[in-house]
Image 1 (tube, rainbow, N blue to C red):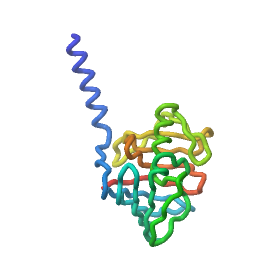
Image 2 (tube, one colour):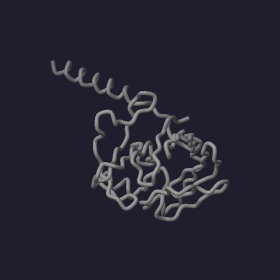
Image 3 (tube, rainbow, N blue to C red):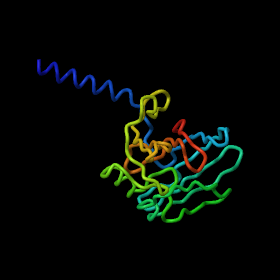
Length: 188
């Protein structure tokens, strides 16, 4: 009977994990396809992970109907950045982010705070780890993704990040105070 119970538990565990989307490993060259929701319009945003190390990340971006460029985050940003770079990026150039800013990622300090204290300050707001409400789980191709869900104190701003400590990529933001939201639609 004990053996049957162990096998049953294992079967449920395997079935639950099978419902998770099998995301490709994010690495240099990975292509993230987002949709940006701004002023009632949907604009495609493609981000390529051009260079990734513990001290340096360069993201190459292309915005449909606008152009392309790059974002550069150096060690201070990756270590402790707690503001998002929501400004319109420079067209045809690499934009090096200030030490307190990140884009489409969580800094190591923010990730650590969310793991240990279940809250962190982002963009001068306190965000807390929460369980997404029914229907708010993040999914790609109809399959749930193992995501870290955080929301501000009013619940008006919500973000989903890939639960990958070495590269916690933004999957979705809703209720962005900057005025536009975005959602990852696919990874190549």
